[in-house]
Length: 279
Ligand code: SF4
Ligand code: SF4
Image 1 (cartoon, protein in one colour):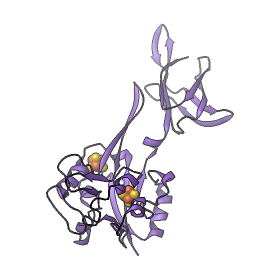
Image 2 (cartoon, helix red, strand yellow; image 1 turned 120 degrees about the vertical axis):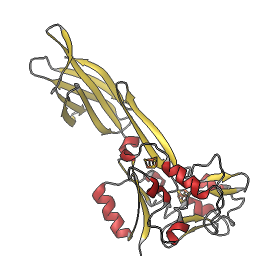
Image 3 (cartoon, protein in one colour; image 1 turned 90 degrees about the vertical axis):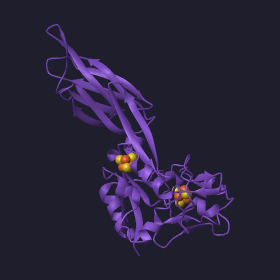
């Protein structure tokens, strides 16, 4: 049977918040029986955009991560809910029942993604229900996907086997694999949030003037292992991506004809920008 999935591309998210706003427009002031009670006007972000800044000036990377209910197949919220207050539909969508879930605050606490919000006025846990009422009415995608101007959010309804091959082919990742909840939301370019970089600028004094060095060969080693090689660009910059946070000591070796070779030791906690490496 075909089931719903969501693919979120972190590299395409510009933090425009149209997905968040279109979701608010759908649920604030509107009740969808069996799917969702009204969303409060303030305080809830059923689709939330997280921000991560990596590195230091002048080489900084800023990425945005849309987070919503992940519609887990092995959902912790469902395990703590009483009276069948959270259900998994045959098409993969998880619904927090707007009537049965009343008073069940434990559903908020059970979500490993902090995707469930507590409606104080209604004493109700609430999360993004994949716009199930719209899909049931024939919509091809939820409003967040239709509102997104960059294509950073896309929904697709396919067999699980097909989704598994799409995931493998496109390198899609779970947001929190350690939670082991079998989500139905998949992320592309998640390394912009989960991994680190080592970046820098290579410079030298040429004929008495400070200049960036273009085309210098930069090699990154972790112990005896060569992690990567690159050359500096037109601004003298280089960058090694997808490094594990807190992965310890690295050695950079920089070589350019006409200059002495230089090595730099770096300890990687979080992303590092080395402002000027002088040859
Ligand atoms: S609408 Fe698209 S680009 Fe804008 S914040 Fe949402 S996911 Fe990002
Ligand atoms: S993301 Fe949270 S609320 Fe959504 S199904 Fe998973 S555990 Fe439940």
